[in-house]
Amino acid sequence: DVGQKTDALLDDLMEGVERYSEKKKTKISVVLDEFQEITELPEAREIEGILRSHIQRQRYVSYFFVGSRRRVLKDMFTLKNRPFYKSAFLYPLDKISSEEFVPYIQKRFAASGKSCSVAFAEKIFEEVEGYPYYVQKAASIVWDRTARQVTEEILRKSEAILLQVEEPDFEAHWSGLTLGQRSLLKALAKTPTSTPYSAEYLKNFGLSLGGTQKSLKVLLERDLIEKSDSEYRLTDPLMKKWLLQS
Image (cartoon, rainbow, N blue to C red; front, side, top):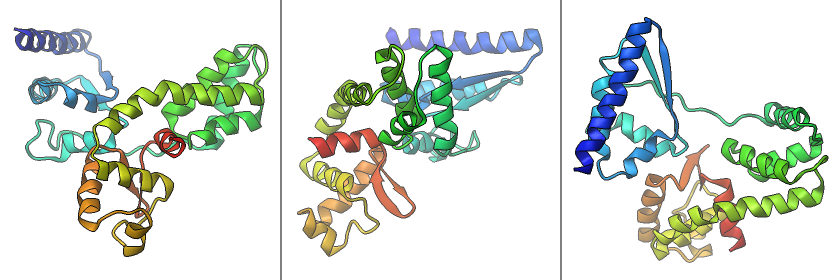
């Protein structure tokens, strides 16, 4: 049985971490990146339960649960019916500022004998609105295409490649939406708003009040949009660009 094998493998893994930490009498930090993705598995709740049962017994091991789908990750630790309910401190991480990221990009290029000017490093950052995952991925694509010095043409082609690489993921999200949800998502991509139910906003984008109320709830649950500074906007800046170009 696949489920039983998975459980046994997970038990063995977690017990191994515990045995090692106790044997060495040393503290260990384990980072589980994109942790919320386990919710996509059929046996997600069972896996969460197994992990929680081991983690709460371990004395020398600390766990960091990191993820980009913030709402999904938050629900794992704040909903009463979830195994990890109130088992961790929540620390929302802000975006890394351009003042920190731009010099970092330049240093990484310089370390390999390549040159990226401040202006081009800033463009890499700004094109994806400082979204850390995309900044690093965009910089990597630019680096791959650069022999010695970054140029405007390299930057332009790299931006197109990044969008092309991420497009299948955007299409997968898009195909799972209803027409009403798609309409609202495109509206928010074009015009973020703090008043999605206002008569003017609904009229401008041909939306209905009832449909928008339902769609907004779904889009928030799927982390496709977020409410930031009282304004509803797309969570993913590259998906916003993809929608506006399609």
